[in-house]
Amino acid sequence: MQRFMIADSSDVVRKVGKRILSELDFLVSEASNVYEALSNCQVELPDYLIVDSGMDGALELISTIRVMEGGKEVKIYYCVVEADLKKLMMGKRAGATDFLLKPFDRKILTAVFGNRAIAA
Image (tube, rainbow, N blue to C red):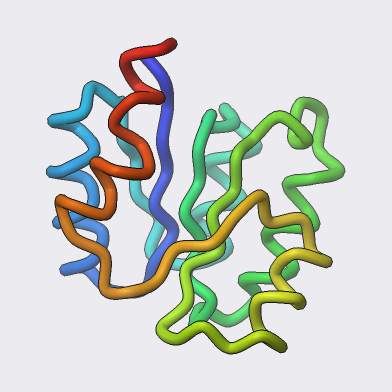
């Protein structure tokens, strides 16, 4: 089973995401801030990570994970509220694999991640 972490300051976003992704057969963990996410990643890196762009230190979290042993293999999705080119480029430079628009829902998460859980 592939591991997935949602790092977002919103309890609602984490709970909704966890429920949907768990139904897609991911083992999902949550982090409410950058420090919690980094601590969890130091114990065990997830296969997939959603990082909320609104969290303080989000870009630093991405770049820190990238330099960790095995960090280059983590698929990191930088989650933004709007398709702001400057913000997207900053995420890409920090090491984000791809982007997600917030708010996400079952349809979006299933479209992006549904076949990946099965393929593993």
